[in-house]
Image 1 (cartoon, rainbow, N blue to C red):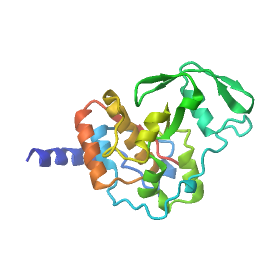
Image 2 (image 1 turned 60 degrees about the vertical axis):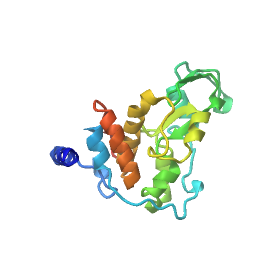
Image 3 (image 1 turned 60 degrees about the horizontal axis):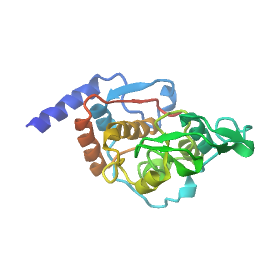
Image 4 (image 1 turned 30 degrees about the vertical axis):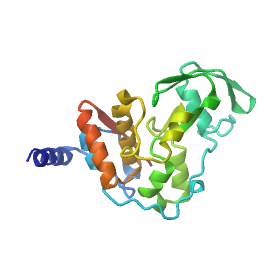
Length: 225
């Protein structure tokens, strides 16, 4: 009974929102509109669909490309490291980064070497493929893999935490620092909504449970062009 009431309330909240989760067909026309939703509403805005891994290759997503400024020698990975540095590194010829300091929020660690960091796709490339990117053009997959226009898409974290995560979704992996689970869930959902990706039943259940534990959390996203 309580569960049914909760679902009814979520459904009513969704109907009351001015913008529903975008689909690829109309995402471009809303590309300039930022949407903010309560995390529970946002989780239920994700379309449900079975995941399909058939045909996936990491090379289907070209990364890292030349980033926002193709003339500066810094690729997307380096641009994320530069933007997230707490203490900026020195940029040497060829965009080699020397020094600097970063906070890896997944595992609450300070890192002082760019080589100790990975730039994580919050929603991994394989997961994106499973959730709809298999139907995209190569150009759109490249845009996804190098998305510098949304702070929730790419994050600099310790290499160890990123490799522990691999291509797992929130039903299988959460950051070892439990206090950041709400932030992680928000960023995961925001990325999927931004790119019109789907969620499967097990993933939806995990996100719904996280939403119940994060009542004050919101999800903000801007549909990808």
